[in-house]
Every structure is written in C-alpha cells, then in structure tokens.
Image (tube, rainbow, N blue to C red; front, side, top):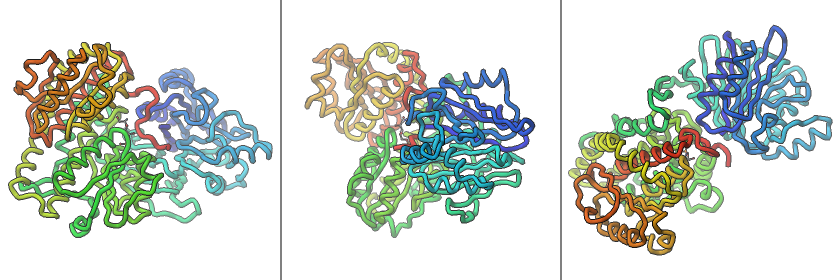
Length: 610
Ligand code: AGP
C-alpha cells in the first residue's frame, strides 16, 4: 500500500526523503512523488514519476531541490491509473498546499462535486485531490484548523502528511484506519507510514492513535484529536536497528528472511517457555481466570497469516480441546458472527495494520468478545486496540512475501495452545516437558532445512518451466500445503493450488497430467500411508511429483518421484521445517523465472484498504 514520508528539520529534506522512499518500496507501489519547500525562494518543487523510485532519484539527483521541509509518497493505485498526474503529492488551486495520502476517501465523489461547483479545478482522477482543495477552502490563516475542518468532512481511511506555503514551519500528519508514526530526532521530525522508513535517523517513535492529528513545528510535535482535544503523546523506543532492515549480503530480502527462520523461532520462544512447559507472555493482557472462561475461539486473519491461523486451529484444538474457528477477516466483519464475552477472538497479522483484520477485531470488541492480537509490529493498530498482544519479535520483514513471520506466528500459536491447555489442566507434566523440549529443538531443524538450499534450488530449476502446481498435505500439514501454494503464486506468478490430499480424488485430480506437477508434503506422521496413496494416484495420471519426506524415511523409495528430505521432527511440529522447504522452493522458482521476488506485481506488504 502507499508509503508516506515527511520531514521537517535542519538538514536538506530531499536526500532524506529519497532514502526513505527507497525504504518504503517494499510496501508495494506503482508511482512516486515528492514536494520540497524552499524557504529562500518561497517555492515548492514537485517531482513525480510513474515508475520506480530510482527514476525519481535520478531526476532529483540531477537537480536536487533545496529546502528543509518536504514530503514523499509511493502510490499503490486505487482511484485512477498509475500515471504521473495521479501520483502524489496533490495540491490545491493555488499550488501552495501539498498532501500525500494512504487510504481511500469514500465520499470523495460527493466532496469533489461540491468543490467543483464552487469553482475548484481538479487535475487528477484520485480521491486524494479533494483534501488540498478542502483545506484551501477552510484556510482562514490557521492551517491546523483548516486541516481539522477538512478531515471532519472526509469519510473512509487515511494516513496523510500535509504542508503548506501558508505556514512553512508546520508539517501536519493525521490518521484514521491507516498507519502513521512520528519519528523524533535531534531537532528534526519525521512522519512515516512505518518505522522502517525512518530507522536510520531515529529510534524514538511517537505512536499516533486512531483519529489523531500531529502538528510538528520547530518546537516539536503536538498531538490532538480531530475535534481539537490535546492528546498526551505515546513515545516508544524501537528495539531493532538498521542492519535488520538491510539485505545483509543476500540478493533479496526474502532470501535473508527465509534464512532468519531459525532465529525467528528462537526469538518467538525467548523468555516465554520453561523446561517444564510453562508459558508466560509479557503483554498478554488476559489472566488465567479470563482464559478459563474462554468457551470458543475465533481467529481472523488474511493471506499467509490466515494459513498460520488455520494451523492455530489444529494446534489449539489438539492441545487445549477448545473449539476454534478460523475465518478470513474480510468475511467475518460483514456477517453476523456468533460471539460473546466468552469467545476469545485472536487477530493474526504480521503488520497489525491489515484493514480487514483490524476491522474484524473491532467488530469482535464491539460484540464484547475478548481480543488478543498476534503481530510483529510493536505499537501497531491491532496491538493498541486489543485486550492483549503477543509480539512475534521477528524483526522487520521487508519482502512482500511473508516467511519468517509465518514461522513466528505458528510458534506463538504453539505457545498459546500450551498456555490455554495449562489453565485447563489438559496436559500432563511429562507431555508439557516433551513439548517444550521439542519446540526448543526446532531452530536446529530449520537450520538443517536451510542447509539443503542447494538441493531445493536444483529442484526448483527442474520445475520452474511448469505453469501449474498442486500442493497437497494432510492433517496439520494441510495448511502448510495452502501456504506453499500461496508462496509460489505470489512471487512466481505461476498457478498453484493447495489441497487437503484426501480431497484430490474428489475433483482436482481431473487437472493432473504430465504438465501439472504435484508437490506432496509426505513427512512422517499418522497419515503418511494415506498420502503415499495420493501420490500413487497422481503418478498414475503421469503427474510429476516432488515429495517432502522425513530424513531416512524409506516411504517413497519405490516411487518415481523427486524427494526432498527434511529432518524428522514430531509430526505436530513438522509444519515449521516443512514450510521453510516450501518457502525456499518458491523463492528459487521465482528467481529462476527472473521475477521481482521482493516486490511482486500488484501486491502490497500491508493491505490497509478494504
Ligand atoms: C504474504 O506472503 C502476503 N503478502 C499476504 O498474504 C499477507 O500475509 C496478508 O496481506 C496479511 O498481512 P498481515 O499479516 O500483515 O495482516
């Protein structure tokens, strides 16, 4: 989704904005633009490009605008095609007010008609352009008041950064249903969509709440609500550093992040699990008494996080024997979910900002359910709006395709399952000890899979020419099959489907022939023999088969399939090493096909619109 950066300080704004825009690229975008105010000339330079940020950087490097105040934007088109005219910043009739925006202004058509009837001239097809015109109309000498009065008229979602030549000592930010943070440096301030954009400059971050505005002057930031009440700023210190947001020698962020899988397991476990299997979360928010009252669980999530949540169903139902339903967040909010105060709603989201998931947990709270979120981003909207939060501690994930955070989510769900089971006295001490020991061995298993990267690369080379893939898995590895298929399609643009292996014969088997390979997750478990039969069925239709098998397991020795061995771990925990193999396979297929794995077409890292 769109990325926002704003700067006010004592340094030249343009190079900082350029660098920050590069850091925002991972969010997904199709055009970009900047506006820099030069106080000596009392002039704003606006430069836009309908291509990548590098094109903008080249143009600006030739003729770098001077000025200490500026805003920059990467646009993910919603209203209007990705053209130069539609790229942000947008301005008013006088070209003095500059606005960048992430989100959708739902009543823009009506606002635009009104503004046009009052003589305002529009140049773009965007919804955003109504905002500078509204500010122009409301401006009577007080920019903050004009912004406030304009935003009160706007319906929908927005994170915005605004400045005006009318008051060039001010940089204004505002948010509603879209993320925005404020970075506080030494006599300099930043407004950004996320911390990644500003991490080289400061670790001190002011979290802006829903419906809040910040006006930053050389005296510092002032936070208020849209109705003008002052708000006490919430400032946090970011724990991670710049090296975590760099490629660190890897060709892509995705490669780096897959390789951080073992670390992601360790980080998610750190300080939370004793050898006796006792689980404690630092900001969990729910007491044992409240957990005991939980009658059922609903999980809401999107994309990869949805598949992690689906694994959560297998995990929690097995360990704690509490019924769990998993639903795409985008569906949950628009029906009448059966929940009440004895329902625990778990929002699963890497970013903590996905609009659908955020709306779903709000709906759950409205219906009085208890809500916890499992997220990677400290201070994200979901974290702030839930009764409790479990942080992944996975460090920033820049590649659009989620990898290490999927793993961290699943580890957190194992821990949640153990915690819920413990309060219900569901597990005997020896099973708890066994689980704890097995979980603590998982990083080694992930390492071993990562060491097999060359084998997976060779396999990917062999299979990269196919156009279709069928991923199959059973039991706890069924969601892994779904995730494997999603990973492949989102970064390699190949058609891939995930199926419960037993379902193959009920329809999709009709697709199989020599041009349609099957990727079977056949690691050791209660249903291995069943999946071997499913593999036989695929081979009998001439489908090439790649099978993920447990190390040393002779199960497929007799068959003419390709094998990838992963370390033998308890079936219950096998999704973790298995998914790493699937992530590497997808990564190598996409690389082989020359795809832009970190920024796949049409995708955004954090989807902050519906
Ligand atoms: C993951 O590879 C995808 N890019 C996407 O499906 C993602 O998982 C989804 O948009 C949800 O994001 P979230 O975890 O930040 O809520």
